[in-house]
Image (cartoon, rainbow, N blue to C red):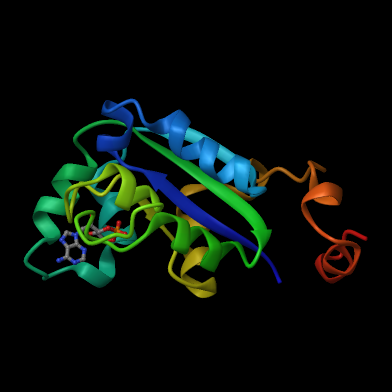
Length: 159
Ligand code: CMP
């Protein structure tokens, strides 16, 4: 299934100069960037984004960390993109994330774990709507014909 997913490159990724390296991993994999912007998030939008974590011991620290500098927001698209991107991101705690994943290779922290990625389809839909207007999502042809086989392209509706 063709899916869109939201990623947030957190303030630690921006400050450590890892934005290019992280985005390159998705581009090299064959995942398409269909929207992207750099912004300073405020408490109001973070409270909506992290509503499920309200009341947890790490919540206040997380909301403060996410406002500690600019972030890069992007919408990624591809066949089963939500699961593929989550696998590439790795486990929440950077110390436990497998080597070869983004957090496993670059993070030593549970909070400062460089990147957020949507957990499932309904979450992805909600998160994309929270951070992007409909007309900021761009529809264009990239390297799909090389990245995917013919039968896969047909399933994606692009054959
Ligand atoms: P993220 O994928 O953005 O989702 C929630 C964030 O809370 C998580 O990444 C971490 O940055 C942060 N966090 C800090 N402590 C924890 C914890 N114990 N469990 C889950 N998330 C945590």
